Image 1 (cartoon, rainbow, N blue to C red):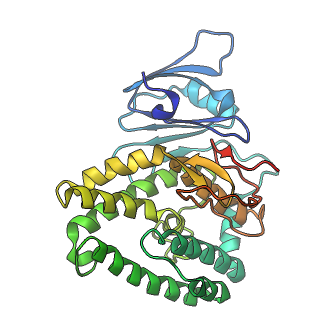
Image 2: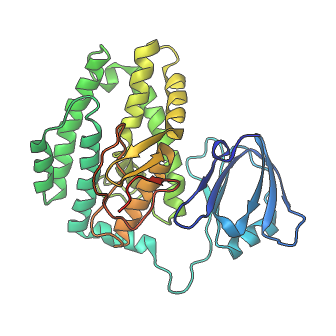
Length: 336
């Protein structure tokens, strides 16, 4: 049997509650104990004992068996979000707990934040700033470029600046692989990049739904007929995709590039890295969740500024930025 992390279980430091991602469920049965909140779940890769009173979310993915009504009722009692994400489905089925009287309406706040041009520009600039900083593995970004971004007060100049630096970045990216041209000229590499981006967005989508956000109401990206918010939130973590494909191409060329890059990315997600701006250490998959939590904190006005967890290879000793959210499973490096 796999251990909890391999199985897709995450513990959140702030409240000690769990999330479960269980593949290809075979059976769900109540545990024969006094408590009716504990369920024994058998799935393709093992089994798990799930205490719904200690959960935030249970997600079943792949081919899923029958879901007992009693299980759903217990999940509702303990305000546990239940998701079913079947293979090849673009969006999961989401069963949210009921909205309690007086509970904050996240979706309304997201739309209002998006309509407020000042706050929308702040959100967009935070996404682009993280994107620029995280491209430094390939080429350093000048302070002048960051200052230009900081000075912008409207959305269109922010988009134009991001587009300008993106064009330059991709030219350098392909050149570093010994290739010429752009995405259209290098299909194996561009297809691998697209596949890995879709994979990360599918994971992020689950956290977006868990936190009751709309994936269609973005800030930097515009159309609401696309998952614009996911495109926004990909900016701080897109370098993981680029690194996975870059390293795989350098090692083995174009042969089975997508499969090899995907395997590398999945390994990267389980690795612990430093997050200097928060002075913590966390796995990349938990940083992915923390990115969504950061967006929610800003949208709900829990934080005045949007502060994404910023991963790095090396540890830096500095005072951490205080945030209203905690990256799940993080180890705090700073003691003050």
